[in-house]
Length: 126
Image 1 (tube, one colour):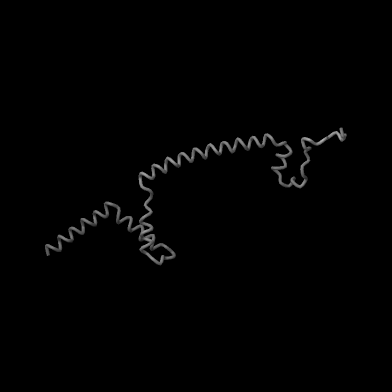
Image 2: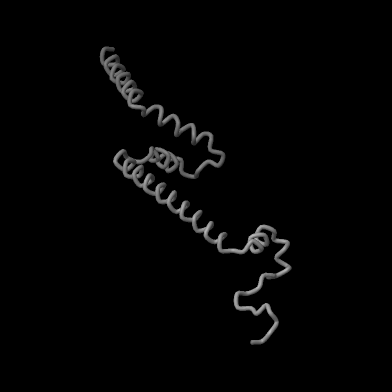
């Protein structure tokens, strides 16, 4: 009888250990996800392995990823600013009629009504 109590005590200690370390919560959440899966996978063990392995990046990896994210956000911001500046340059070079035609697609059928830079508007052949 004493042997039974000793093994029961060890089991209880082990159970508390698993609970403290978060193992029980993690296993429970994976099993609940499997239970709630509408299309049950053919291999439940692969499902469990896959979901247990997705705990996130390692701390050393996450710091590198944070730095890369900040760098890419800065580059994106610079490119957005450059894009805005280039769009403004294009708009400044267009004539008002071209801008008007670009904003109203129904006017595109009327063609280009602005003279070309080398077109002679006087009607004389000099």
